[in-house]
Image (cartoon, rainbow, N blue to C red):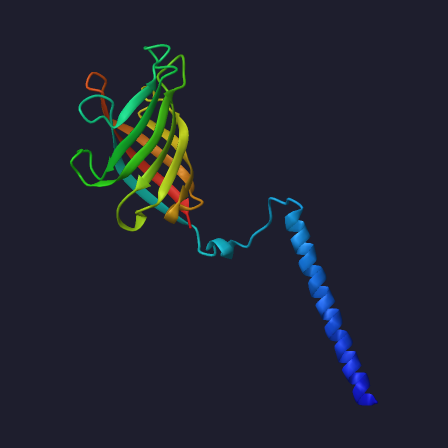
Length: 198
């Protein structure tokens, strides 16, 4: 009789545990089915338990809109030639280790720049630095900002994200023009990147 009571008590506990588990699963499933689109996640799920670090990168951006092999093409003509307002240029520019176009290519700058000011030459720049070499191969940095090309010797634009090694990156770039030849349609800009990432 005592043995039967213990078995009944254990069975009751087991049934209670199973019922609670089923209810918990039903609650989780119904929450997902209810159209919830956001949830809190643990940083470890994205490998973010590492300490954030600061990386410095420097390379040269080679833009060419004329010649036999242009790396950029104007897709919208400007409303005003004096400020380039309204123009839009799509680019796939080489990023090199040195100012010479023949130096090692580390990646491509892919995106566009558009004349965004009526009173000066200033561009809205939207581009990804897509890296092709070494440990950064396959990683990108996303830059989105204002570039007042003529009025500032050093221009600063924000890094708004990245992928690969630079996942969840943030920081800024400093752009310094090394060469601007309007007649030849060429420009070389040194980019110094200060990147916080995991």
